[in-house]
Image (cartoon, one colour):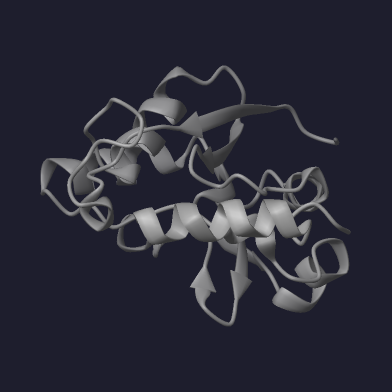
Length: 160
């Protein structure tokens, strides 16, 4: 790793897709977690992941971290489904924008950081490390949990 980077695992969220049940004992938005992580990090960058991504591969994390450049504000994977903001590296410079959006009750990460210098990692590059992109599978519903268990039993989440 060329640049120092902290690691943050976000736990909580509003759990709206999980029937309102708190998945990790905390009630807060992802942007709140990003803000808190950036506020407390000692390094210029922090890598963020969600606690509900059980198949995140270290190779994907390494791919994101290898792309860190001090000129960028956000290094984020992008797939055909969109951006993956909870598997990304954020510059501490994102702290001010996150705070402004939280004060305005605008909780979408992408909206808060859209004016920053963003480097995307294309899907083709991500598939080199994770062909099925299981790293971005997250458990938002009881059905997702059942699917994760099936994937684990079948071995499809651990291959590659």
